[in-house]
Image 1 (tube, rainbow, N blue to C red):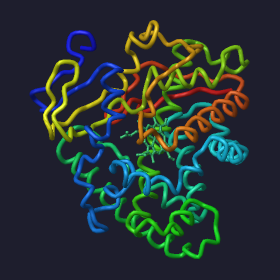
Image 2 (cartoon, rainbow, N blue to C red):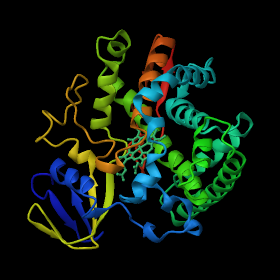
Image 3 (tube, protein in one colour):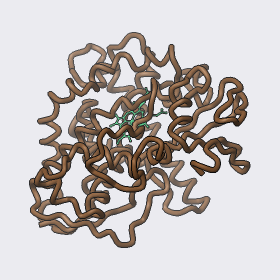
Length: 366
Ligand code: HEM
């Protein structure tokens, strides 16, 4: 498709699909022609649901107000100071699986680690962490199968979790508006430019945007390393861990696509996009565009430079990218230091239906 129809109209979905780096880049950076506001968020109010009032749905200039207050907290320099704590939390998550030499990497590590870290950054009290995990799980729960009843069940659970979590965040934000803590809930609570609904939306966005994505980065990393038989070379430093993780982001991008809506008529690669049309930018395809990457179908852990767009592009470039990178780097540092061998069973892998990742990945450790 990249070569034969780089800008393709899908009649069934009534959507445009973009498969090349060039057009994907254009659509993600040109917010004056393509809006990230997929659901009428400009006119959203506190009653419309927290998620519509967040930075990910709003274009500049409103975007700056919704993101500006927190940018500093997610800078690589700021996060580096927090790295020792990430290492401790990673050890704690691994302590919970110690003793078993066979476990599901997805359930017992890749899901738990990002939730544990974000719960601490937000400042969720330790005694509420189990409840918090239950809500976070429900927020990203996948239907057990494709049947209508199972889809409905998972939607209901999601709505329930959103409601529970929304109320819980609202209560914590209220309690912390005196500004005594240094967690992200306190930061949001003391940011006067945001309404309470926007503060709640911000807290929920961090969970929705940051957890399942990082889970899949961790899972896809072990999958790629084992598939290529390079886990030991990463352990010994023969292959650079950070660079290998970048290649995982390119080769198996957790988020495969992003949608935008055209705000005006625009021509893209000779095709006429009309105002109001939905455009799907395929990050996964752009990340394998031969115009930009040599041998794009090959996993090359030493690839450098690696100009993948797994974290998006433009004003909505992932706020949590530096955190996700540190989490993945620390995770494999600690994991490979702790276990002499780690072997993943790569037979019968079940892909996720939502993002690019796996349902489970059974590992044997020693
Ligand atoms: C935005 C990917 C981890 C928070 C995005 C976008 C992508 C992305 C592609 C752009 C969305 C768009 O343009 O519509 C990923 C991947 C991750 C990851 C692949 C892990 C490997 C995280 C983490 C956090 C986070 C750990 C926070 C704790 C956000 C936020 C936005 C965002 C708040 C919206 C930024 C804005 O609109 O200005 N992410 N993300 N992400 N991500 Fe991430």
